[in-house]
Length: 145
Image (cartoon, rainbow, N blue to C red):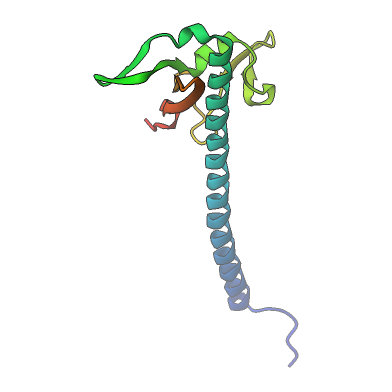
């Protein structure tokens, strides 16, 4: 007798194998996606730091107070800014990274990993040896609640 098709057991075996392959692919694709989102946030943090430097260069009067951090006095001048401060001050970010409101005004920067607003994230700008630097202090938008 000639066989004209697959048995139920053969079909179930193929379905199980395909399901396992798909599950493994989904896990690896999800890991790659998460890694990409984390790199995007790292890039945004770099852009925030650069925007803070540009802001401080345009507004040197903000760097006139000596820096005291946790009671320790440093020999340079600093200011802690939020992302909101920098956005409200002008065009220090590339427009593609910012979210706009109905009127087209730039209002927010979104953390791609958590989907939260980065407006309350803080960056410190400081002048040392007549150069302006910045460092991200706190990325509140990375916190999961």
